[in-house]
Image 1: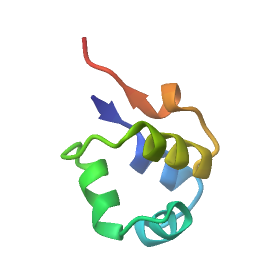
Image 2: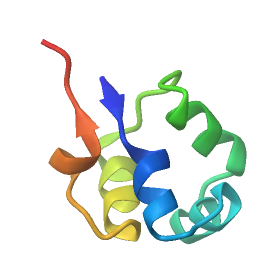
Image 3: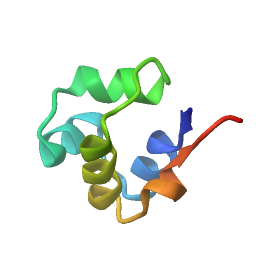
Length: 64
């Protein structure tokens, strides 16, 4: 699974720290997510998508 968190975060002119605080996670988790080194839970994916004003489907692409 790949994600577009960094892209959407840049659109909102939001730092990793700001996103982390908004979602209630640590900045390091955002780093791992952006590097595709960590797959979030469904709840976390939903919270991130909501914080970035998008949907889970737009934010995450599932590899076939």
